[in-house]
Image 1: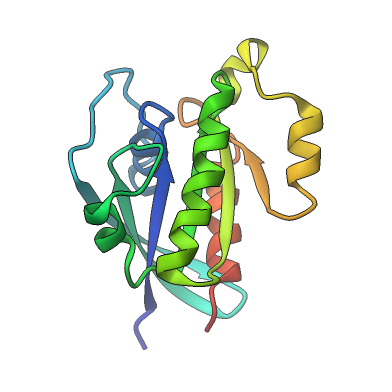
Image 2: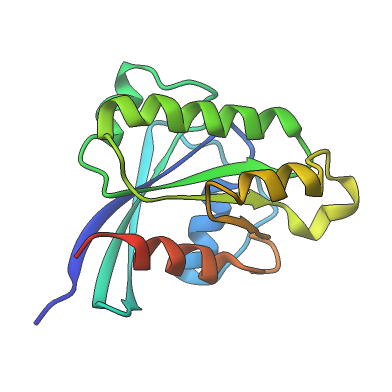
Length: 165
């Protein structure tokens, strides 16, 4: 039997590392070259969950701090969301949380996991540990690094495990 395919979307402001996180998750690679995503880039990878194999069809949507009509069309049908913020830019966390609110109007309630990226630069972080502790009361939060791979696999696996059967 083949794995159940589920569309998941990455949402976050520009430059937070969405494309790098997908490359780390799907191909276990990282590049220092900044590539702006135009529109959407789709990748996939199969993962094992407690409920069985699941194919994550990952939609890497161009970075924005708000969803426009095109972005809303891209997220339609998503079974889960990965919100991405850059730990070195606190404003990107506010943008990610705002994108979640906007996405809810299109998707309703779907599983959501927050990735605070650039853990390899934690000494430069503007996002405070107390802020993350507060967020963890309502949302799964992972401190990730696309560069080193820290917690990337765990964050995607957590979302996959939260997806309805």
